[in-house]
Every structure is written in structure tokens, then in C-alpha cells.
Image 1 (cartoon, rainbow, N blue to C red):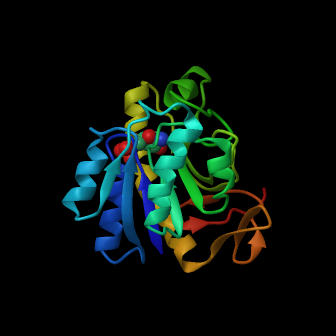
Image 2: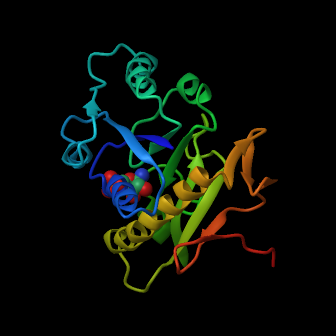
Image 3: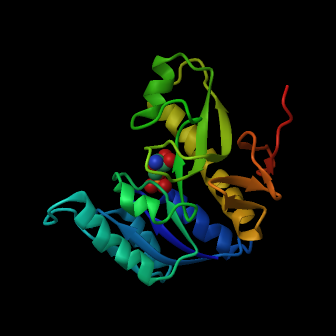
Length: 221
Ligand code: GRF
């Protein structure tokens, strides 16, 4: 499975993918890393691993559509089977997304549909959520609104602030993303008829990451 990874910042999720591939735990290849930020540490991580990494600044483009056309023509050029948004912080135009439905996933730091958008950890604390976490979903034009594939739950602890909570969620994001990619690569997770299939059946509820970092289907209560 050829992966193109989009990242705007630190790139710890990218690193988790690269390490899983290096350990032989993920049958995939990162064929390109792309960023809207020239100084994104994710680009350095990619280059250190010998992967082609490019940035394109939105400045100088007349519109979002214009920028996306340029960026995604570079993404398409590496012929990815799957595009992984891993901390890519820029909205993507509807047409760009629609043309790639089922071939683009995103990791979002909340249990979707709760807490879309930014500052998700603070949103969770403000809402007095007792359980928070992360989700991997297919990208659709609705921001953070595409079908959820898998989630990892993280308990909110007394005394948590947004930074502490973010750190614990991030530790679960990495195995969540790797496990999801593994099952897409194996074909167990697939996009069909505008929805997520797992083992050939429409997914009724997001898969959950267990303590052994495997994705499991929970039976309805
Ligand atoms: C992650 O929390 C991801 O879910 C969010 O942005 C953060 C990116 O972290 N959308 P990193 O760049 O992968 O370290």
C-alpha cells in the first residue's frame, strides 16, 4: 500500500507509521510527505527517513481551490493508494476531497462526532467529558464529519489540563493510526457504497483499539 502523508506540524503520527513499517508491523510504503508549512518538523522526519518531502505555501495562491489543485497534483504524482492526513491543519476544498472519497483518511483527537474542529482537548474538559480519545475517519467534504473507522478511548483524569490530556491521547493516536492502516492494507477495512466495510459487512459502529493495540468490534450493549 502506497501512502502519501499530509502533515502541518510535529509529525509524531508520521513517525509512528514509519517505525511500524521499519519494524515489519505494517505492510506499506510512505511514498511522499506533503505540508502547507515549510518549517514543519514532519518534513525533517520524512527526509531523515529518505522520503521525498515537499511543502507548498498557501500564500501566493488566489484561492483554496487553486492551492489544493497544486498541492494535490503533487500528491497524485506519487500515485498513492491512500492519502493520510496526520495533523494536516488546513481545510481541504470540497472538490478536492470529493474526487478522492474513500482514498483519504484523517486522524482527529476526539471521539467523533464529539468535539470537531480545533482545541478538542479543551472542548472535552469544558464539557466535563469522562472519556475522550481519538478517531480515524474517511475524509468527506464535511469537516471531521466523514464515516468513522476506528477509535481509541482515553479516560479523563482528575486534574487533567488540555496539555496533559493531549499527551495521553497522542500516545493512543499512534497505535490507532497504525492498526487502522494495517487493516486497510490487509483489505479487512474498505470503502464501498459510500460507507466503511469491515470483513465485507457495513460497519455499524467504530472499531475500538484494545489494550493490545488491536482493533475490535464491540457488540451492542
Ligand atoms: C494530532 O493530535 C492529530 O490528531 C491532530 O494534530 C496532531 C498532530 O500531531 N490533528 P503530529 O504532528 O502527528 O505529532
